[in-house]
Image (cartoon, rainbow, N blue to C red):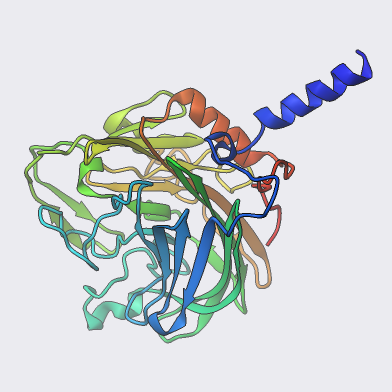
Length: 373
């Protein structure tokens, strides 16, 4: 192959490998630099960091003292419509009011050294609070606003009921998007502190979002769900108007059948406010338990659970993941919001490739896969 042809081939390959946000119509000026398209605003007095993309509000990292974990809440579509449930922070008419611990987009687990970090909320009676753990925001290590991405790096502690930390968490959030696209990469580094930490196999985990009503599956039957501590929550029959959510996994499985299956990615699509919107969670091959099992429920809980296997496999598999003192583990996930059309399998496969391979910064686009914090 001649030198010029070879150079052209490499250039075309780089263009095709660019992140979806770069290919989706972002305009890059070759002259005067643009203002930061993706802007992070630190509001320490309000215990939050606001994230804007092209001057539109996207989400906030919130860490109020009266919540049991920091979360991203709310999350908006590119047109500004919330895709997360409002309850319990900002209830909306017609919503379910079950599972008050399911807020925004979060990361935690149902059994860590015997403590339930997943189900902890304001609704837990004081006499049983000693069974639950809390994740407490400690500091913001770095905030960056740029044209192609924004980065937020934070430190959290996973605490026993008496306030003793057992895990140190360092999380990096990478925000990016284009006209009809929003995404968050979250890289979570967990370090065991002074004691061994055991993530006992449990269905309640790990990286999850509680969605707006439209993304739920239509249902005419009441259901009762029991958490890891045996506490029941009744999910009552509700008006199904506008409820049209549908799961689809990388294995071609759809609807409620996605629950308890393994897949490298899953989409949840619905029409909301006359806009076709897909939500997607992508697992990473370096995560323990890849490809993850999916704790994806029809009532709006959409979760990837890499550490829970026993209940999903009906006892055929079990993973009690353990960290010795000082040992670390890193989890990587991508969360996507696509508006204007439902994500296809082909688009999701491209997202998966982009997320799981190193990409060089080219034409102003960001290298998507940090290998370390």
